[in-house]
Image 1 (cartoon, rainbow, N blue to C red):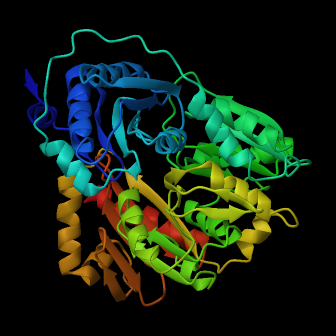
Image 2 (image 1 turned 45 degrees about the vertical axis):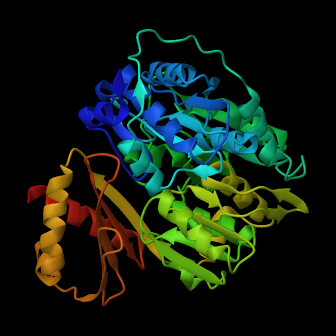
Length: 472
C-alpha cells in the first residue's frame, strides 16, 4: 500500500497560486492517484457525495492524468464523471450545482512539458487550508496498474453555454462580428456556438493541434500584431480568447488592442452594478480612481485570496465580485442581470466579462469605454526559467535598500514613496509610477508589473527592470 503524503512529497510537486503544478514527468499515475485520494479524504470530512467530476485541457499529458485520477476515485467506490476537454469554470459550475467535488487537469498557461491539478470542493475552490490538508493527508491506496477508459459526458458543456445565453436577449449581438482566437484553448469548441446563440457573426482564428501556452498577463509580440491585423482584415467588434484552461479571458477591442485583464474586470463589474470588489494588489489603481464601487479590498495574488475576502465582503454588501490582473472574473454573489438571476461562481471565468463588455458597448465602442476610465496604464512580463530562490534573494536585498535597488534598475531619478509587501515587493514612486516584483507561484519565473500614466512608461519600467535583473 502507498501513502498519499509520501508519494506527493517524493514527487516534489507543490501548490502554487492556482493548483498543484509540476513537470509532466512528475505527474505519474501514482502521484495523480495520491493527490486524488488525499483530496477526497479531506472532502469526506465535511461533505457527502458519491461522484467526482473530472475534466481536462488540451495538453498531450492531460488525458492519462485524468484516467489516473478516475482510477483513484473508483478505488474509493466513487463514480467518476468525465466531461472531457472543458473550461475550468464550466467544470466548477456544474459540479457546484450537483454538490460534488471535481478535479481539473490543467497547467493553464505554463508550457506543455508541465501540467497540474486544480481541485474544487462541492461549494467552490479549495482554500489554502485545504491545500495543506491534501499535502498532509495519509490516505492509503494501491498502486495504479491500469488506466480506465473514460466516456465523455456533455452535460457540463451544455450547462455552461446556457448559463450565459439565458441572461441576454438572443438578438443582443446581431450586427456584431466576433473573432475567436481558438489556439488550443479548452473552451474553443464552446465559444463559437455561445456567441452565435446571441446573434453574433463569428469567425474562428488560428486553431492549433499543438498546445499553445497563452499567458494573458504576458501577451507575446506575435499575438499583439495578430490581433491588429485580424481587426483590420475582418472588421471585428471584439476578439475573444482565453488561456489554456479557459478561466482567463484575452479580449481585444475593435482596433485589435488587447485589454489588460483588470481593465476588462473593472468594466464588467461596473456593467453588473457590483457594490464591492476584492482584487489582488497588482491590479490597476483606476479601480479605486473611477469611484464606481462602494468598497475595494486588496489581497495577495491568487484566486484563493480573492475568494477568502468574499467572506468578509458579503457581510456588508449585497453584490460582490473580484477579478485579477490576468483577467479572470470571480462572481462572489448571485446577481440580477436583465431581470434574470445569474448564480455566484467564485472561481475565475473568461466568458462573463467578455459578454458584459459587449452588453455595455451597445451604444459606443469598446475603446471609448476604456478611454472613459482614469488613464492608468499597466504592463507586465516575466523572466522564465528563473529559480524561485534567486528571485527571493534579490527581493530580500531590494526590501532592505529600495533606493539602491532602484539605482541598479537605472531609475536614478526615482524616489520611493511607499512599499507594499502584501505579495512580493511593490514600490510606489513619488512620481506616481508603480513597479512590482513577485516570484511566480506556479513556475520558476520572476514576474514584474508596472503602472504609469502612459503605456510606454509602464512598458519601459518592466523591460528595463527585467533586463537589469537578468544581467544580475
